[in-house]
Length: 144
Image (tube, rainbow, N blue to C red):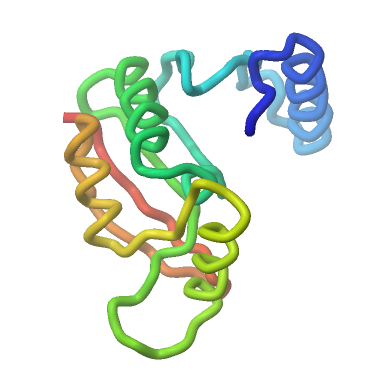
């Protein structure tokens, strides 16, 4: 359950982001807005979603991505940081995390094909998946 619609929660998120961006020296390049991404997402050139989609089932994930797409111009970037489950039957941290998400939340980790389907259904084209040294991958898309 999320509380992003709670005004106090919005203020805390924006304050925390402001502090972090100020420490990194990039606050002057950012506009901070609190909100509920299941209702709307502010527009811009790119939408970055870090370790969020795995918290949600496909219906809410589609809503979130559709809202991102509404705010982006054609060619705008969608960058998701999340685990990408391998299609083989070998053990991996991502598969363990998938079990945790299924047990604790309404969410789950996704395969590259599942991300491609989500992107396609919501107005994006999956352009590449970049694995990192951790269990996280960068799943890049472009608004079509």
